[in-house]
Image 1 (tube, rainbow, N blue to C red):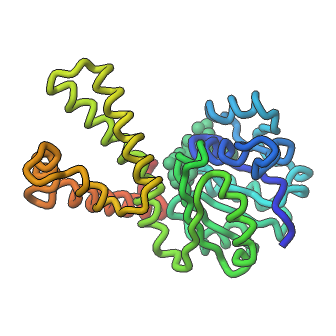
Image 2 (cartoon, rainbow, N blue to C red):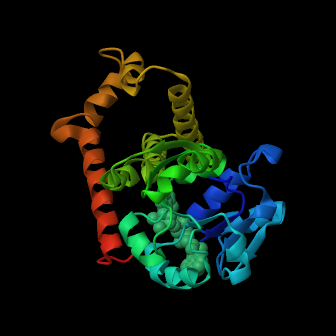
Length: 281
Ligand SMILES: NC(=O)c1ccc[n+]([C@@H]2O[C@H](COP(=O)([O-])OP(=O)(O)OC[C@H]3O[C@@H](n4cnc5c(N)ncnc54)[C@H](OP(=O)(O)O)[C@@H]3O)[C@@H](O)[C@H]2O)c1
């Protein structure tokens, strides 16, 4: 497989913006050069607008036949509700062999292949930490897409780490764990700030403490070869203050771990509903 150089990114909202930011990081060592990126979005989000000012790539409302002829990869970062309209247009302009990489949660390889025809098709479940190159993206490919694994991995590594799964059925849970995962961590920061305020801290100090604690714990996790459980135990001496807090968090009814389990199950269910068209995003 030849190197993927020219990319059409369809959808320049939260996810498209995060991916583009990840790809364009690193100056000359960027995974995608700005003159090889076309972002297609009638109303791109703030991240794309700022990136376009800085990097001067093409932003347009629809992919023309001439543009489509030259791209090595089309990436979908649109909501599921826009998928049929987008597919109807793209199928008319894309070359028959142009590979497709979709980030749309819940839309299967099979459904993509019906909409876009037989071609190399990959699905990627990224998250928004891709924007700073700290995302994690999980991919799965159809048979024709298998050969592109190394090239797609190289590209997505600009946005963080990359994993591949063979069983597409795992992608719903992947989306619920790592795709939506940053939202759970941000909620924890909000909750920690709120608890600090409730216990008497000034709001701005509580906000800084909550933020820095999450950032520091994340950095510690990233730099340590210990498991999260080992790291937690190291800061939870028996009978101490952290232990008193964890007795509440891990207390009756399963506590936080059980709540997170239910949250992940709900996210997975929702992705199935959205993909089947029985819900509105
Ligand atoms: N956000 C996440 O954390 C995350 C994580 C994993 C996967 N995903 C997946 O990423 C996809 C995009 O999510 P998102 O959060 O980035 O949504 P989003 O912020 O709404 O971005 C979608 C963008 O596509 C644009 N758009 C609509 N119709 C279009 C068309 N015909 N051609 C080109 N662009 C069009 C939208 O414009 P308008 O706003 O004007 O409609 C919007 O700017 C979803 O399918 C989601 O499942 C997201």
